[in-house]
Length: 578
Image (cartoon, rainbow, N blue to C red; front, side, top):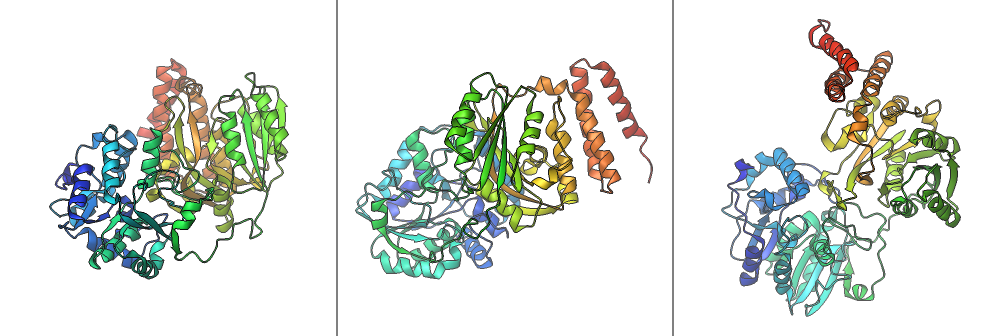
């Protein structure tokens, strides 16, 4: 960060005052534009050389009296932002520092955060003044709003209550640049003397530049609507909006776009939206998916979990609830839901633990595919659809997504995966096995967990979870990988993992150190026997031994500590010479 301290960004209110006083146009740059300029695609815009070049030209243009070029105000005093934002920008600069050093040489910049003045800031006290200054930009003016199909900026709130009049041009939410000429012509035909507000991702920067050159005032204000919604509700974390696009929630599948007569009256043209997408189920892809949910004493969270399952955009599923002897009323909640929805099948058993519950669920499953959901966790509405799409379209045997941790005490997400971090890839088994030790994109956690995955059910033939032990995921899931041919991964946070005081404690896991070692050794033996390259797995095993050695000493397991120390001595001093 210190190497980028030369980049000077004016604060939000100062940037807004500059726009107001000079009638300036605005182009805002964020991390997504940087990824495009360096050759990568992002979820809402595929890489396009012409777009990348245009963005670079704008970025390298110094701000002038009537045109403000903006960057995120994160090059000094990063402690102003919450921990999630700080971590994101630290990781971003670690990757793109050289780009900023080469291309951001202007004397100063406006703040990209003029339209993001709330959610990431620790001190939110200035947000009201920022939104007031924003609204003053269009107070009493006739406005032409250019936005994506799912943006619906100002719908359901008073963001634009002070305008003289409002018209909307609705464009594709994804790959808008493919329709750039048509969008630009439509704006010219409707602009007149209107103030033009653009919420259209990277395409907005190019459109603002060209409109400014033609004599219009145009403001690039992406994400302003989500920020304003969060501000109005007093949110402390990024809350997904059900009726329109939400910043950082990446993918718009499953939105319930409510009918709004005022919105429809404001729409004067739709560009590039002639072709309607056909859903998987409309194409005839409607294989049954079995969702296995073990339930034990989760009455506080169970309804949230089941509601998220029943809201899935992919409708061909059955839910197998295995009530594992709950004593807190969870069984009654299960019965209530099973009575209301025929897709839910409920079985009760004496308490035997999650392995036995999952094994019973697998025995009862009738679907072509199977996924697991823990009863205190919850899902994005597109969880099944995205996993199914990834599996079918890539001829994979297992489809995997990412997750976000949700802290129940603080009612906040511990980290976020933004649209700029999106990628998807299909791996061979060897390639996927090498991801286990990678901390990037949560691979080391996603690799092991039972949820977040859609399996061909046939892979489970001959495999069951071990009974009466911890780390059942660690002992089981890798065996499914070994039976697969192709594994698809989508870096979308479609699964919400609950973290609560009732969860498995660190002390419990420490006392199960012997299992951690035994699982690693069993896996190594199988990989060698099956002919896989185990170079990285040997190193991972070595690190696991070091961790287990410390845990054994900490918990007083001295005999185990001595056994581990002996193995470490062999690895350190007696490896076979090549």
